[in-house]
Length: 139
Image 1 (cartoon, rainbow, N blue to C red):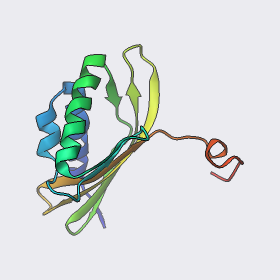
Image 2: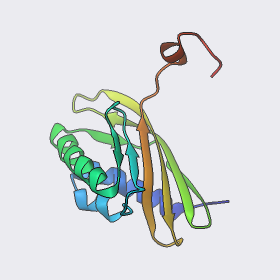
Image 3: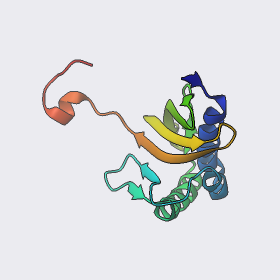
Image 4: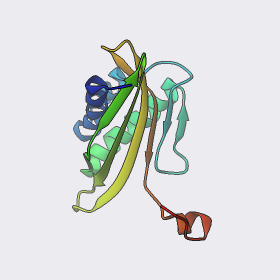
């Protein structure tokens, strides 16, 4: 296992696509096919297949740009083992009014080491364990 700066760049460019309103920048890094999966923060955000992902992401990229929402990065980190890389970030959505909403992002990419394509993406907003399971558990 080794650190993969190229995969870190891919995640940064994907995040840039939202701020710039550039759907093509997102699509350039997306693998095509039925195995592509994006899971978002909303319970209805589970998109399977590159066509469905692009339909949803195209709309969301435009909507977030129009709303003045930015994505603050934390510390993007990626690692690879052979043709698979995984990347993560603890960032935040920055609303137009300056309010920050912490987010967690993970993604899986495939490639040959030079070109990485997004296969799976998950963005979530943390919820306290006691809110989810009804009791305090170790964190």
